[in-house]
Amino acid sequence: MNKLSQQEEKALISFIKDWLKCLGFNQKDLAYELNIKSSRTSEIVIKIKELYKKGGIFNIAKNLIMIEQKWLNNMKNDYREANKTTPYNQLDIDSLVSQMNQDTSE
Image 1: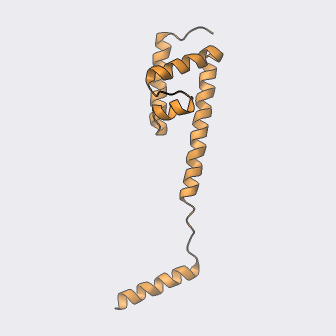
Image 2: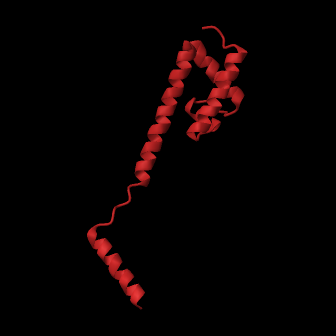
Image 3: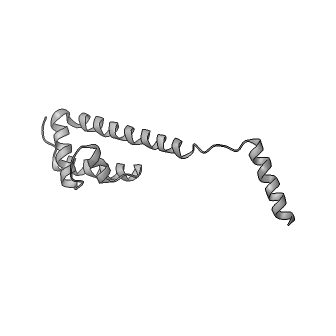
């Protein structure tokens, strides 16, 4: 594949930064998913260029989509875990109402 032009590279980095911001992630999160040690923009650019050499813009898009899907699945799973509180059953509600009545009558 040909090299990315400077204009394409700048546009891609700008897109990636906006994309990360929209998802609530940062360059460190992306660097982790890309298996690079540094989260500096220059290191991310090197990795993006490697992806481009292996399959063009399609390969970059494919990898970013896979990362986003992984993040979204993790968010969905985290949300489910956070909302796994056991709902009150009728006995709990009756007990709470009785306790409230006792507290207010004193």
